[in-house]
Length: 328
View 1 (tube, rainbow, N blue to C red):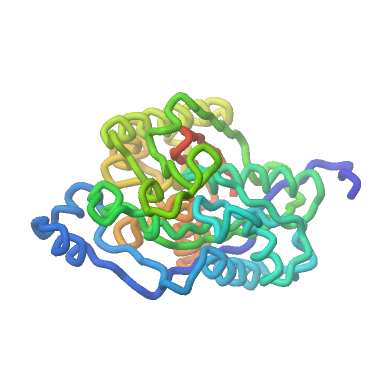
View 2: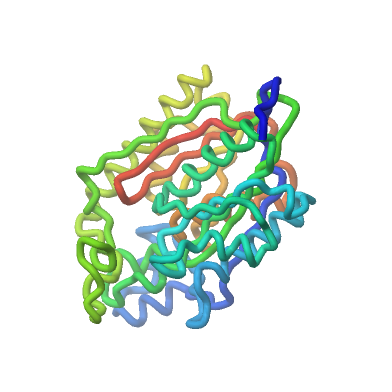
C-alpha cells in the first residue's frame, strides 16, 4: 500500500479483555503453602488472580479479547492490516499462535507473535503504531498469557505473582498527527537474560520428557526488583525528556503490573503524584504482557481516558524494558 502524503496520528479505538473463570484468592495459596493470612497481599499488593481451565490455550484467551476490542472499535475484520500477539506462552513452539488467532477472528491480516515477556505489549504497541502511520491500516494488538502452567507449585515467589489473562487494543489512524506516540524508549540487557527464565523447551535445553526446567524461575527476586525499578524510572525519565514534558504534565500512568512495591517505588521516584494510575494488580495479579491492555480495557468501561499525555512503562525477562509517552 503506498505511503500517505500527510503524516497520520494513531488512536486507541477499541479495547477488550478476557479473564478465565477460575478465580484463585490468596487464602487458597497461603493455606497450601502454610503461610499466614495476608502474607501475599502485604508483599505484592495482590489479593486474587485468574487461572485458565485445563482445556484452554492462549489462543482461547486471545480470541475473545480481540473480539471485544473489534466490536468496541466498530471496525470490520477486513480493515485490519496486522495482528500482533504478545505472549510468552504460545499454544505451540511451532506453528506461531498469531495466525490461528487471526483465523478465528476472521482476519486475513498479517499475524506475528512477539515474545517480549512483560514488556511485550509495549513493544507490540509501538510496532503497531508504526504500521498504522505507514499504511493507514488498523492494527489489532493482543497480549495474552497462561502463566499458571509455568509456576512451580512450591515456589512462592512465582505463585504469589503470576496469573492468566488477555487484553487487546485496536489502533486506528487519525487525521491529527499529534495523536499516538510522542516519544518512546526501548532497551535491553542480555547480560541479565537468566534473571527470569523458563530454561527448558527451546534449542538450548530441549524438552526431555520431564517437568524439570519447564517452570518459571526467578533465582534472585531482590535483584529483579532493583533492575525493574531502575529500568522503568530511567526509561520513563528519558521518554519524558524526549517528549518535552515533565511528570507533572502526565495525566495517566499505565505501568506493567509487576507488583505493588515496585509500582510504589517507581511512582515515588518519578514524582507522578497527580497522574491517574491504571491497573488491576490487586484483583488480577501479574499476567505479564497482558496486564497493561487488561488495565486499559477495564478503565475504558468507565469512560474516556483523560485528554492529557499518558506514560506507559514496563520491565520484563530478557532483560527488556522501556517507556512510551502517548497522546490520546
